[in-house]
Image (cartoon, rainbow, N blue to C red; front, side, top):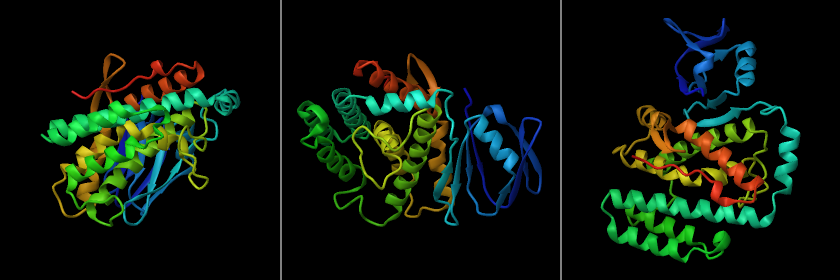
Length: 290
């Protein structure tokens, strides 16, 4: 599996030469294409060749473009992520309601479990116990919105009782930045497996082209939350964004082995499709942190 996440900032020219991405700045550096999982273009002063972009698509390399404020603004995905994408899309359309609800319920359960684990790690025992209660009350498809109740307790414990995800502040900017990186990673995996990102399990917003990625990424959000909590800054600028990018260097335990997060996302995403196609939610592979 490719593993390297390359972030290109400042003024640079990128091109393709003999299987390498050549980065031309004050100095010239090269990165083997076969090692790259994701390229983040963190500057509007970067130019790159169509030959390089074409090679990225052949190798299923995710490319994320950032705007003038260094926030992810768009991404590049191949039309043909899988040789049998027509078959996969037919499968996706016919996933039955029962298995989609079972998988979504399991995603919500493990999202709250991961939130509870982070609260326990930080010493918020009372709030962790409240989340344990929500886990025990969870019913099929979370029709009683235990996820929402857990989120309020969880975020207020992490960032203060007055904190709201609707506020415009550096903490929410950092969270949104980290979540957008996760979303891009899941979009890449969904596309690489031949499925489309628009058709979700639970998310069904007609204006959201990434409904399925929005479903699948939920369990991984607490990893972003912990990184943002540790920024210890009232500002969210370039240095803080670079720290959030370290999420791709994080290692977790999944499928009985240690993996970098991008590979763990790949394994987890494939297990989701196995569960949906075989009507068995027990096929999900969930990560553990060390």
